[in-house]
Length: 281
Image (cartoon, rainbow, N blue to C red):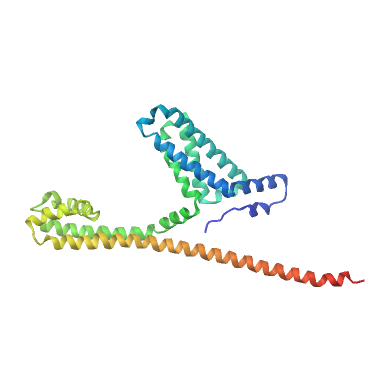
């Protein structure tokens, strides 16, 4: 798991005025109300960006731009506070780096020097992923599932290719618009995998080939339901593994704290046992 930098890490630094100020900043940026406020601003920013796409809000466009600039300013201030609180340790976390890149891009998009980046302002909404821990788990699971998804995708392409060759041989002469060559057949079969209009294609082919329903039914069962379930199974398995790792980490931290409490309790008992002896004349 990635390392998180909490107030206790900064508190271990020498108690200089700078260290105390950083500890206060860490307590500020890690306060629940601070995170909730940032989340609320991100949601409000999403609403204002969406309103700019409606023509009916053209008279309000200058105000919407002003609100957008205020949001960017607040995000930049928040980022500066977090960097000042954690120092160089801030950039040891991949999530913090992603958050920094998003905010920096938003600041550049708000300037006139990089007006072309204004179209990508909506990317700042991705900060929700970096702010909400549960979403981080989902993103990590998606990234970790990429190798498995690639393997399933290769199998899916092979299956589509095999069925495309078969379909071209069986129905290419009568329906060249669907199965004229292998690439046209693969495109048609991909459309069938999405279940978008596949019944119309099957009915057109079945008008000339009454037994073609066997081919389409087999392909839908194998190419759609089986492969789709494989994709879902891979993602679910990785999410469960991430959840198990998080739970295991919590248990380890809990056991460590309990062990420290036991040691501390034993020392307290030892001190209590010595106090009467020291108080005797």
